[in-house]
Length: 124
Image (cartoon, rainbow, N blue to C red; front, side):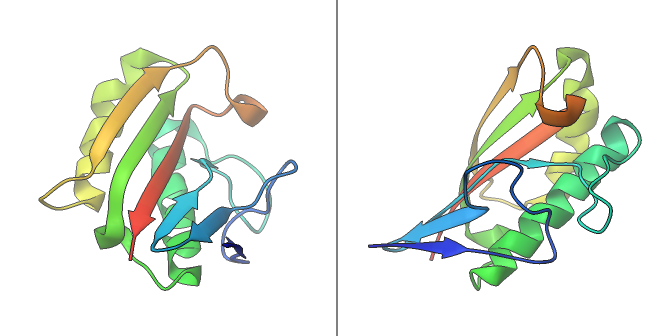
């Protein structure tokens, strides 16, 4: 059985998908851009977008009763792999050991021309 997770403290979905789905003891979170949930606008620059993406992730996880400590896997999508070091440094500030498993890939374009998008999978 699956249950949709919704947080008003994170941007609403910009398509036909849920912010997160809980099934069993696992929560699958949709990718979060650096969108301000109040305005729907992207933060300015990769640093601000990465920090905002983490704020959005934390909000969605909180709606499921979880924190970033519950995250077991992440995927980081970058519009430009040249931003990897910057995003990686910020990423490291949001997790502690043992760090989640992770993939990081460069993509041609992200929704709304974002610079970074991060999705997470968390376990209860």
